[in-house]
Image (tube, rainbow, N blue to C red):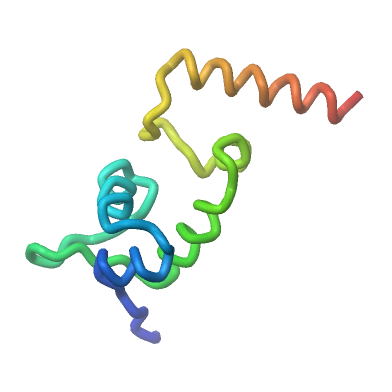
Length: 95
């Protein structure tokens, strides 16, 4: 079993092209899995790759592919509106 590389928040910010503040926000919201080792957050290489790929997707595509979950910052009204968009999109595709 190979040991997977882990990155600090600063390294993850540099790789993803985002600010460290954005990385922390995404860790706390649950959209970027990370583990706290003492006082330092560590992010697995695989999780960082997935995060970089999904951060390029639009919010609609993230919801459609179930990347955004109940921990997201959407209000219940926004979630319902997006569900309506998804249903309408599926009906249009099947027609």
